[in-house]
Length: 316
Image (cartoon, rainbow, N blue to C red; front, top):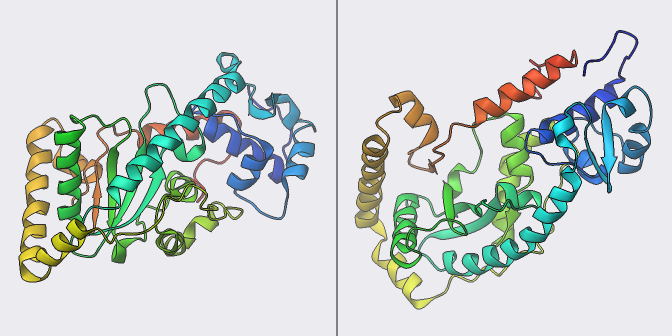
């Protein structure tokens, strides 16, 4: 489906369609409230978005199903609203699991904040999906924290990651994200805090740049919180034992250890790919085996270009 020369979108309509197109890649229809939240422009309201979706030419390019808006150009996308309702129902169970695991994670040494990220932070859960977390750690102890949590997963969860997917760690002094893209902005904007609401707010403030992409984004209410206490005897004892020079040396050793692990485990990747997928910096650790970001953005650009929209501006 392409727009003819007679079908001229207003900038407001284009922004609405851009937003719906992006989430359509993930088979994720949006409510008017969500379109408003993820819109790349402000000075509007969900009610105005609903009204605009009924006007030509935009009305020919989207359809509404059970209160959700989706792109009408792909005939395979029918039934997405029913699919989303099932994912929302599943997500309610995943929410319970995420909060349960957060109560465990927060008791580990040097954990300072926990947020849900990924699919669950959008309010849905696929049948084969995981619960992804962003973990904020104390400075200079990220790799100790990461290693202890991975050991716990291997020993007590038998390496199952469905409700314990730890793929992103940052230290308190490195909460500002370097990658400034639409994808990163959406991931940050949709984070759901599980503990330490003040650190969650500090993380959002450190990444205030996301408002350039999502000016209507607002902080999460915090209704998933499970508390912020970290006063367990074992936790206090380990943090005391791992203070000072010994802790510094151990954290540096584990940082180098994990770099070797990634290189040995994924020899098919070039050094450049490994650095991108498995960031092993002093204050940041990520582990994303699938290099999906370029694929997503390429799909998005292709969809924009098929409609004659600019695909090289800052909103990507």
